[in-house]
Length: 328
Image 1: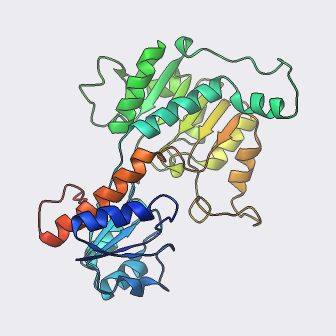
Image 2: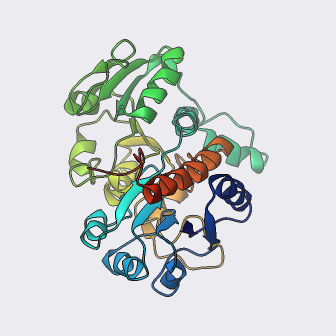
Image 3: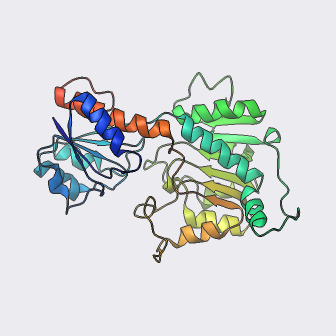
């Protein structure tokens, strides 16, 4: 039983793949590079393909199938980078290997605290030995209303973490969770726009959630609202956010994800001229903290996604129930 693994990082994944692959009785083809039409022939002899966040479009899905692949697993929670419809048309089943919610939830709280305490500008001043107070006045979380959009595993864990800070918690989800109701109040989105001092996004990227934060919705928010995104970049319309920051309608933002980050994040681009102008502008603001899609990245996460992605491949090849298969 053979699996081709793309985007395999030498420094944290390779040894884990070798360890778990051996334990599961799998033969692995490990490739450092992301999958492409040029290296799709590495799939030959493998029933399963294991990827990260590379865009898998119709052409690449076709190339995988022509080389014998029947199953595609991504080592991520989200799978919006995969053309699932095309994969299914070509006879490729798709799965994802989610990691535990704690890493992203912890990171979310960190970005909230950094944003309301103006940590970016404090650190930048400290680095140049400017120890003045003016402009660094922060706020306390206990005095704020936080709106959580999306109460899946991560959103629920964020709510659990924030419940100890004494802040008022509002929540929105198409499918409310009973476990949330004792800690946060479910309300319509319109009420979150109106009431929340901090809004944190934890919803998947779909056609309906694309650009859910836009000029129209920002105009409904409190002046000075803080926006946090550790989910998917395209939930926020970058141009609308930039205008709102310049107009001081948005007081701060903590962004671990941005629009059009494919081809940028996880690569060394320090000597390149980047074409993502919105990212450059967002990074330039003193009240915007931008990190490069790092919220998930913990030791526990890496172990989990490597092991579970291989377990999923073995389930598929043995025709067993596969809890990682995407059925929707």
